[in-house]
Amino acid sequence: MLFSTYKFIFTFLPIVFLGYYIISNFLPNKYSKIWLILASFYFYSQGSVKFFPIFVFTVFFNYFAGSVICKSKGILRKIALGISLAENILLLGYFKYTNFFIENYNFFTGSSVLLKNIILPIGISFFTFQLIAYLVDCYRDKVENYSILDFLVFITFFPQLIIGPIVHHKDIVPQVSDKSNKKLNLDNVILGIFIFSVGCAKKTFLADPLTAYASQFFANGGYGNMLDGWLSSISYTFSYYFDLSGYADMAIGLGYLFNIKLPQNFNSPYKQRNFRDYWRCWHMSLSRFLSDYVFRSVYHKGDGSKKFYFSVMVTFFVSGFWHGSGWTFVLWGIVNGILVCAAHFMARKKWKMPFFLAWCLTFLGVILTRVMFVSPNFTTMINAFKSLVTITGVRSGLVNFVYNNLYTIILLATSAFICFFTKNTSQITEKFSPRLKYAVFAGFLLALSLFHMNSVTKFLYFQF
Image 1 (cartoon, one colour):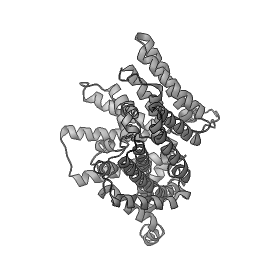
Image 2: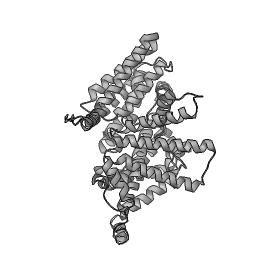
Image 3: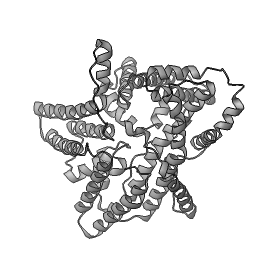
Image 4: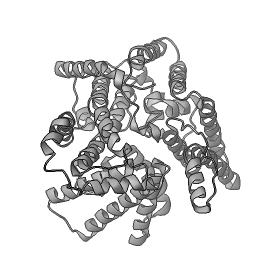
């Protein structure tokens, strides 16, 4: 079930919202938690029916595994952690990477093992990371004795369940357990509706049409000239931002409706001067997870600069492989790691370029790495890069190209203006106060979004 659909907005959400506060007012706290859990399980089942029983099993398995880890000592504690981590990694590995390994096995051995017909369960990469973080924190004695209801709300809370933001138990459980959060807060409701409407508009007005345009170029093998290549590459650069940040805005807005504050996921990443700052502002909940549970598992304070750079590369290798089961994703992760290492090296040497030059080089790097990310294979990626420098037919066909793609160009200009010259969601949230202009703006965006929902596409990160 997508957020930007009539079924979600006019049926599911009103029922869950009203039921939650009615139960909160007349019944003990645990019943409102049960209501959210059941609603979230239903929400997930609508998008991944076949996987739903496995999802329910893995959620309960990890809760009891975490309890065993917390209560155990010595070798039993390590065994419990190993078994529970293996369950999550193997489950993710089977659904996401089985065909990748079969393809590579066939390539290197000359075999012809048939690929399996495996449908990737939605959200598996996201909730698996949350479960792994929970288990590791149990092992590190950083988890309190959560009740099963608190744990289930933390893992299954429907706004963040399938595409994030990736939430941490210590951020969510205290909010869920706070009885004062069970009271209807009109300020939060207004803020939530406003942020949701902004995210919905990002998705329907900007992300979807830009994705539709760019996907044609890459689906056709990346063939074209400079105009085709750059317009498609830049379109994907902006569409991915508005698709994922739009979903994050909708999730954050929905969280406010239930007085649960989800973490911000973006902080104007396209305004940054280098890749170190870019990754601190892009998909921040994922960056935090990778930093806490991958980077800090390899690098420890005092290890030295060589170990630091090695740890950065390991982290981005994991990030690339997590994003997708293909060598283009691995290359994307490695290149991003190199660029982040370069930014750290320049900072340590106190080398600093003029901001505009640094920003131009960084944004160019973002566009080129996005080409790697969206290309289904190396052939398409190479063709796309070639198209960026192919000038054949550019001058003679410029006027017709602009005329035929005027709508996409206008969308890109609008996207650039929003990214570079307006406040981001975090800045809006910090200084938000309920005013008539916000209500009118939210109503306008939501009304227009509703007229475009017949053509809404899946979120790009559903495939991860």
